Structures are given as C-alpha cells and as structure tokens.
Image (tube, protein in one colour):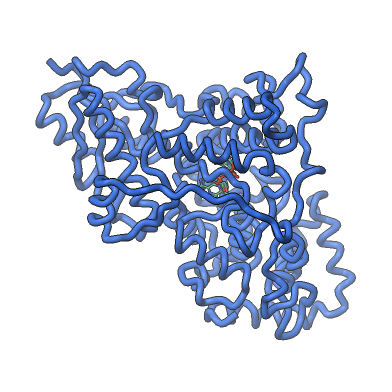
Length: 491
Ligand SMILES: Cc1cc2nc3c(=O)[nH]c(=O)nc-3n(C[C@H](O)[C@H](O)[C@H](O)COP(=O)(O)OP(=O)(O)OC[C@H]3O[C@@H](n4cnc5c(N)ncnc54)[C@H](O)[C@@H]3O)c2cc1C
C-alpha cells in the first residue's frame, strides 16, 4: 500500500538528495509535474525547455527502473498535477524538498505539501541567514573565505592552500592567439529526447546532456581537458570559440543531475593529482562554493520583493538586438546574442560585460532585462537570475550586492575580446559615427548618475574622469543618437 506521494520538481533530479534520499519503492509514489505554465507560460528558449523536460523524463524512467511507481503528469499547473496524483492514489500526504523559488514555495506550502530541507547546495538557507545577519555589507569574498574554512576546502593547517586566497593576478588574461581549443562533447539523442523534441517542435543541438550519465561525462571532460587552463582565460571572450575553458556544468548543477559537492571534489582531486594548477582550481572552486552558494543564499535572504528594485530609474524598453542578433552591427553583441540563439548559453563575461553592461549603460528597465535573461538561458532559475541580474548585472538594487556597477567602455572589450578589430565601431572613439557605442554610453552613464556615484569611493575616480572630457556636450549628443539607433535596431 502506498503511504506517501513524493513530489520531485524539474530542478530536483537527484536520487540522493531532497525528498528521494529516504524514498522507499514499497511505500512511496514519485510524481513529476510538467505544468502548462512551465512550458507555455512564457516564450522560453526551446533548447532550455528541451533540456529541462527531457532530463526530467529520463529521470522518471530511471526511477521506474528502480521499482518506484512514478507518474510524469502533464497538467495546467503543478497543483493540478498533484490533485491528479491524489485522485489516483488517494489522499496521501505529499512531501517535497523545499522549492527553489518563492513562488513555488508559497504555492506548495498553501496546498499543504510538507518540505524536507533543500540540500541541493552546500549551504543551508538557515546557515546563510546566520552569516548574512552578522554582516555590515554582503561582500562575496568574505563569504567565500568563510566557506573555505567551514568546508575545509583548499586549506592547510587553517591557512589557504598555497598561502593566498586567490590567484586573480595570474589569471584574467586576454584570449590567446593561435590557440588550439579542445573539442566539446556532443551528446547523442535517444528516443525520449526525440519525443520531447517532437513535442516542442524543435531540433535541439547536441550541446546539452539530458541524463546524469551525460552530466558526469561533461564533468569528466571538463576536469581532463579544461580545468588546468580555466583560471587564465575565465574572463576572456574569443572570436573563434564559444566556451573557452568554462565547465558548461551550470545546467546540471541547477537541475540536480550533478551536485556541487561532487563537482568540487573532482576539481580538488585533479589538483592533488597534479593535473591542474592552484590558480585554476581555486578560481573554479570559488565559482561553486563562493558565487553559486552566495547567490542562492542572497536570493532567500533578500526576499521576494528584491526583484522589483529599480534604483537607477531605468525605464528604456528592451532593445530589439536582445531578441534578434541581426538588429545590431556591434560585433561583440551580435556574436554573443547569436550564441544564445543557438545554444541558450554564453559564459559569465559575455553575460556581464556585454549584455548587462549594455542594459546598464542604456538604462534598460531591469525587470524587462531580467525577464529576457530568464527566458533565454539554459541554466536560468528564479533563485539565480534575480540576484545576478538585479544586483550584479544592472545595479538596480543601488549596491546591496555589489559595491559598484559593472559599467565599462570599449577599452575593456578591446582588451578582453577579439571582436573589436573587425567591428564597424572603434573602441577608442567616444564621439562621431564610428565611436564604439560602449565607449559613448559608458561616459554618458557616468554623467547621468554622477551625483550618486561620486559619493562611492570605488567609483569617484571614474566620475571625476568626466571633468577631463572636453567634448562632453558632443558626447551627450552622440549618446542620444546611439540610444535612438539601438532602439531602432540600426547600430
Ligand atoms: C547577468 C548574469 C546572469 C546569470 N544567470 C545565471 C543563471 O541563470 N544560472 C546560472 O547558473 N548562472 C548564472 N550566471 C552565472 C554564470 O554566468 C554562469 O553560472 C556560468 O556562465 C555558467 O557556465 P559554466 O557552467 O561553464 O560556468 P563556469 O565558468 O565553469 O563556472 C562554474 C560554476 O560556477 C557557478 N557560478 C559562477 N558564477 C556564478 C554566479 N554569479 N551565480 C551562480 N552560479 C555561479 C555555476 O554553477 C557554474 O557552473 C549569471 C551571471 C550573470 C552576470
């Protein structure tokens, strides 16, 4: 006789975590719900939907093979799906791991679902809360150092391995020239994949695995072929390569197929076995035990209304180039957006220094930008997009997360990308028809917000740089032309 219904969300696909870790095929029914809201509620990127649905269907099949009664239910809403499960199995108690968004947390709680702790991270929500409540400001680096100590990761006798907390000075190189990038994995598609592709009417690329086995292969490929050089090129954007030495692991970490613990352990083993140097291993480990955990912790700490911040009063509508890469002549932007169109992914620096930088300096409405980012990326979830966009990307929270906005002109992009040489626009120019829009908009942004940023000790030097611009009136005029051109999709 069944005693419990275990609800497994599409981002909790892990047999050893959440509600499944003490599951029993003799007494538990496992239910996954594909809600119409999830599939049709918004214009989601097809690659993303394909990945999420196919992963969940493979996972359901794996549970069935293990002897569980499993129902993969398609319904209008998650609650409708759970009602359908109760109609079949009786009025059983429903349990799930704590959901990953405020919205689903409230809905399931109201329906009477009982939660077990969300252990898909290395830091519980309570633990993070205790850390955050003791902080005057929420500097990620402080959290990261506490994590290294608490989790005893890359530590020797209480000191950071190698004597330093980070090796950024050795990293942050521009993209290399004439470099042989290792090949990336291509994942073959099975019958479940084909069914999902048919359902969604799409032809997915071979980029993303849809099983745990595929996720593990991706991890292995990263450790063997990319980790050793992760650090040096992590901030670079190459013209001849879409992923550099990034791990491509975020989708699997975020839907549960991989857990942070095993990913970090694999990187540390590679370091111990001499396969990767400390500057790359530390940089990678920081992304996972630092940034990823911090972002999740801050999502719950900052609360549901945090997403609505618009402290810079940015009201521009989403630029057409975000939804159609052909609507811009800017080489770097066009290349990044077309990568997203293809694979629903681009790495951190294009997200931050190209897309977000453009949204920030054009004064694009943060909520419109958030909606677009949320719909387009393979690894997006509410918990991770909201703080990354509202806090890190467009400074809409006025500095709660980051002490300064990530605004930069064309000089940065010229140094870190390979796009400027063949672009119509010149990163060194701030006025005139050939001026790089990033350079013009950077100064215009600083000028528009100078009263606010001159008080910020990390920004005052940049703001004071405005005084040296003899052509500021001309630049302000060019900025207006650039903004109109971007709105019209002609720049
Ligand atoms: C505006 C913006 C939006 C972003 N949206 C997302 C998102 O929706 N989902 C997402 O997983 N990441 C997001 N990130 C963080 C980061 O860009 C991606 O995690 C990374 O590009 C994924 O590729 P990767 O797995 O190859 O990462 P790698 O560069 O190999 O890094 C390893 C891992 O570190 C973690 N990580 C690193 N930085 C962050 C971060 N800021 N927040 C959370 N995790 C981090 C990820 O799990 C990632 O897989 C965003 C960053 C920005 C600036």
